[in-house]
Amino acid sequence: MSEPIRNKKADIPIAPTPQNTPANNAPISSHAQQPGIASIKEESLDHATAASLFARNPGLVSMIQGKLGSLVGRSSGYIESLPVSVRRRVAGLKGIQKEHAKLEAQFQEEVLELEKKYFAKFTPLYQRRATIVNGETEPTDSEVANGREEEDDAEVEGEASKDEANDSTTAGIPEFWLSAMKNQISLADMITERDEDALKYLTDIRMEYLDRPGFRLIFEFTENPFFSNQSISKTYYYKEENGYGGDFIYDHAEGTKIDWKADKDLTVRIESKKQRNKNTKQTRVVKITVPTESFFNFFSPPQPPTDDDDTVATDIEERLELDYQLGEDIKEKLIPRAIDWFTGEALQFEELGDDMDEDEFDLEDDEDDEDDDDDDDRETDRDVDEDSDEEVCARSDHLPLIMFIC
Image (cartoon, rainbow, N blue to C red; front, top):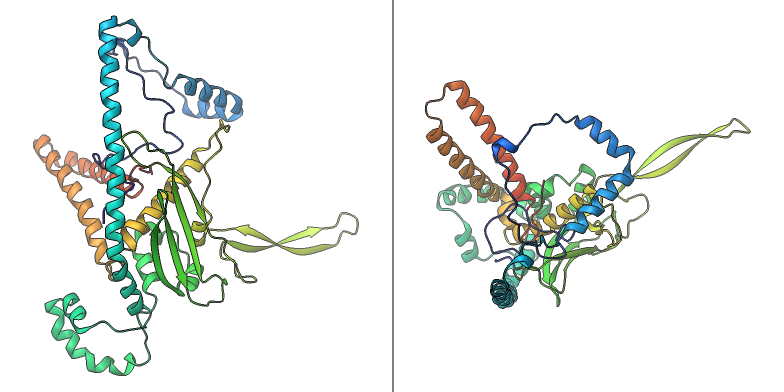
């Protein structure tokens, strides 16, 4: 399934987010002299001292950010210095570019409509999958034959009689979605052992498009001892206005409030703390709740900072990027290919892409450094591995329009 909100341009590892998108178009560079080798001087920089200086002076950091922000979009004066006839041509090119932007926006809108058209065709397949997973029905002979590999036929037929007794007590595919999620790398890191007990009650994960640009992820649960919700959803919204190039720009996300049952909240842990009365000198033990890691924090997404917040924390931006990427992974990878994640087959396709990148780099290294000694070759291999890891991270944290940074 295509990705409506993805940037259809080249596979660039990072792209504007709601926090770093410039308010205006980047200025045309001036004819200022470009630095050459002779003009570049190395300076020793004590990073620890600099970090300490900024840490002690948050006002200085804010002032620098404000000054830099005020320079974005400001003209260098070069265009204004051009002859009138040249400036007229520049204006004409801008007019042509605006027409191009209109067509790009129309293209993205039509891609989204095409996505929705085929999603409507996918939906019955997802519904059929859910009935089999939850034991409401059995797959047909043609479905089984279509999905069974030839080399497995004899083995499956031979074991059929042995499993016949257990078939009567096992309904559907137990822990289907939990297993699939644990094989999906970006989600597996979020799932704790405590979460697994609750996610065993997960019966389906669905997606639906909104009337406005955006989508909603819906997690269906059976009755369980952790919360009373039968479904928990998370909605990703996009801005009404398209971005540069007609792309959809991520705005924010909203999650369902989870109605936790008494002492079952998996997003907090209980700690005991001793308190001493200053007057009576007696001590008592009180219990306090402390936030803790949990997959269910996914439904309490971070919110973008307000426009008047000049000191945007980097960790907030990283959390926003990671949160969006997780939603994309569920929408574009987990839901369409759930059975492949359950069996683990999807992992080989993920790894295949990584191996291909590494092979490409190794080939280039061999061509460029064929005369190097073994030690240099080993060092090159280590560098390649590190670069490949960064690329894997960039891909897993990339967004369609909003590509995340590790």
